[in-house]
Length: 482
Image (cartoon, rainbow, N blue to C red; front, side, top):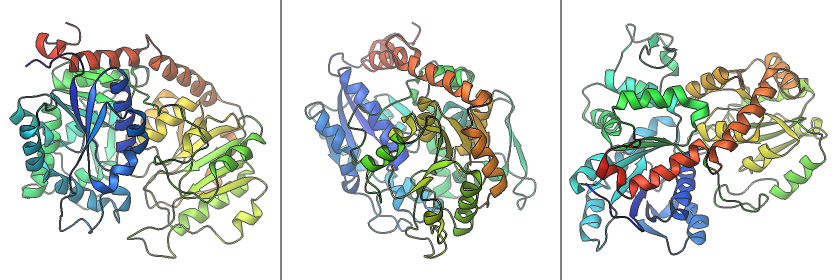
């Protein structure tokens, strides 16, 4: 199988979730500036997320807009995970998107110059079967790190079960993964924990993950210096060396204070946020944010507010308010009087925050995070200490990795856990004190991350190899090292 060289045409198919889409779009930008021609598959309501990329590359990127398929378990009008009531709907979203197989196949077969490869999200494993029908390679894009993918490959291949189906702490071991980690059942992937053996719909979802392992290659938004052991493990586990670490993938340089489709509206302008930070001392501010999906209960918010008050530190706190499916009045409400009491020390943002710009500001010294992979990488690139509160999905594996590499400390865990305010306050105070090995290690890892994406760095080399491979040399001759 040979892909023609020069302007190679690739189909990019993101999974419609903010943390998945943005990283793949940043990869797409890198592919375009290296000479590839791209078609991005998107449904109508997700098209605005592409606008900055499309305006930057009007001639090299085209869109394929297909209607979002109806599904009885996906609320009408919902086309993005951020608008789902909770995680239990994710499997339905995956199943709905599988219905795009036939219209996509028809599009390929009627296109005068169809793409010669498919790059699609980890949640779209069925595109491997489509690629096989078309006799072209499918490459997995993983929005999660190699450590987590090492775990889920074991889960879906071996399908371990609990001896006691009611024991949330039942230990599941991974002897084949580096470090032989053991996780309690409750910390495994929510999608896997929901798996019903023998159910036709769930067996299709398992097949998606098995198809990922059978795909031609996998590309990670990660870098070798962070996850070398896991990347080497995956090459052995998958039986080939088509494993590329090309991160950290960063957005193209823009005005850092300008809101865009990457984020949205917020209660304070980005320019005012940066102006507030400019008045603070170096490494004196803690940034608190739990991503685009997590909504805290009022009890969790109150405990966090008490911790911030007791810590005495300066802070920026980004809060996601209650959305569809959340009981109004029980989620996302800041305690009465908190903002007035903390007005001299902190900012509370409701809605989107310019996270990258905040983290990279000299005044920010630490980041209390849910450990979503994009947030982890953004914290590493900013060189800040990371306080971990993993809640679901890949976040427990990410928090463990941060502890392993010495830049993170777990302060709470679980989506429903109410944190200990005293523990939080102590960790917050220490994280901006300038003392301890985590700050030093954070600076070291920041340098490694930035070196990786420089010309000649490990990720830059892998990205160039990936583009070369997509243009045919590896498919024809058989190997990254050939």
